[in-house]
Amino acid sequence: MAAFSRSCNMTTFCRKCAGIARRSWLRSPQVGASSVVPVRWLNLQEFQSKKLMADNGLHVQRFKVAENAKEAVEIAKELNAKEFVLKAQILAGGRGKGKFTSGLQGGVHLTTDPNKIGELTEQMVGYNLITKQTPEDGVLVNKVMVAESYDIARETYLAILMDRAFQGPVIVASPKGGMDIEEVAKTTPEHIHKLAVDIFKGIPDVDARYLADKLEFKGPMLEQAAEQIKLLYKLFLKVDATQVEINPFGETPDGKVVCFDAKFNFDDSAKFRQREVFAMEDHSESDPREVEAGKYDLNYIGLDGNIACLVNGAGLAMATMDIIKLHGGTPANFLDLGGGVQEEGVFQAFNIVTKDPRVKSIMVNIFGGIVDCSIVANGITSAYKRLNVQVPVIVRLEGTNVEKAKHILTESGMPLIPADDMDDAARKAVISLVD
Image (cartoon, rainbow, N blue to C red; front, side):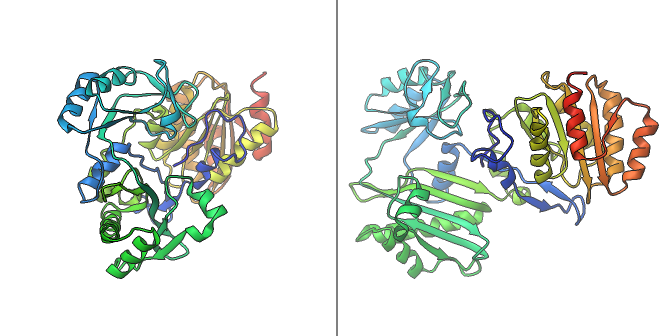
């Protein structure tokens, strides 16, 4: 899913930052029917998605993954293909037009020479790849995918997703693949075809052929495409996906229908029965603070400011960052404690933000509906003692058990700065920076 842009110096909704607000919230059986925990999207590398498809009968290029030049050359010789494609494996898009810190241009290369594969790998692995979707200094490449290269005679687009409007899976197909599907929908909507699927009945052959026909496959390839569509839907259900996107879903000059690239989204609430899938999660490109926060069901995104924010609720967190900006400050993070937060979660939130050397002030902004303010207050006092917090802590609490919470904070004897409301808290957080 989209992440909060670290290069963005605004807290209002830009296109990149809006991904934060799209994080879903689920009722958690572990913490009771009235509690919620944040959903964290799983991202797979390209080779992982292709392995899922290959293992389930879908047509993909033959490939293997290498971590050094020697392995890459050995794989190329083993594949024994007429032409190879070498792809750097990072989660960001725009790899083909990216640039390595080694000086190599492009994260995707074609060659007929296995030895050239080794030379290129040496300039990829161990270097950062910079694309339009990475931070300014790029992302370290640890693996490359060596695959057989296929010529693509024609590209189409195929996706399956859960759609609220249809209350179930919907298949989206377009003969205009290999391009921005949003642009296709905007400029030529007649090329977008949708088919709702009865989740209890699945896809009948007639519907699979209908979609293959709309994708403009002809002759034997129509039946082949229809079979691939059915297999993709079967995989979609098998792994509890919320979306799978194949772009391009193409055909080769010799009559093969191939899934050339794929993007999967998974239902995180099904993690307990998709352990093998979630075990593939790659944290190498993640901020270690975000990974640590996820262990405690905290939603954390690091930013570039110096006022840390501890808030419950994604909307309130966004509003808190906005009001800090309004008063002339800059937020150091987005941190949503969640509705089911307990004392340990509050402590871990403090533990994460206080490790950031840029943080000069901490603003706690809690509106207790599901959250019990007294639990948060106990967590604050525990964190203050155990972590020896050295920066000002401004606390605004409102809602469930707020009076008890204020009593806990007062009796603690700690130099916490109380705030009457959200505006007062933001103002005091900014003022504390110059005191």
